[in-house]
Length: 109
Length: 115
Image (cartoon, rainbow over all chains, first blue to last red):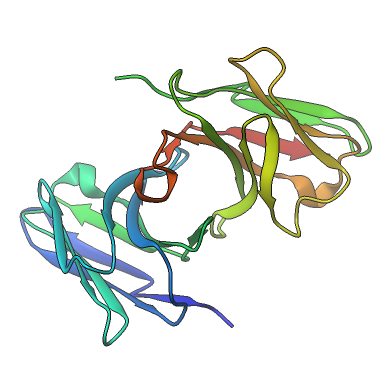
């Protein structure tokens, strides 16, 4: 059974628009929850790391939220740019990183 | 900014052959990892390495796999007898002390193709 479900599987947005990606998890406890960005053919790059005590964490135009009660996390991208086209992966750390399947975001001009 | 480097970027090998994938982690990092990603699938944990020994490994990391830090800078993954299903992108990663809340820095991977 998947311990993390990400939605949507993919989405297309226009440049300059905002979007929100969802991550619902069942696994707990864990030490932290992370969001990574993976460009096609490249290694994942860390965007945010949140512990249980944190509700929100920002990294530039990326803002992650964490609700431990509902076991949900989201990643909000503000004012999207063409370079935001990538896969965004929710990752939980239970002493090793376990990756979700990701949401593929395509930003169009 | 320091980065993790991996070589080669693409390796083609015949089934049954041995391959060694090489990685140079960030110099002051102490924790090292290998992950793999089969085309179109999610990133999967293989093994973590700390203090010159394996700290954790997944069920994927069977006796055909081994890791080594031969000289204090390189970190290698060896597959002794490759199978078709070993075809994947292999990512090396490293992190600094304070492992659990430190970001993992990934290399750009080695694409392994087993024919």
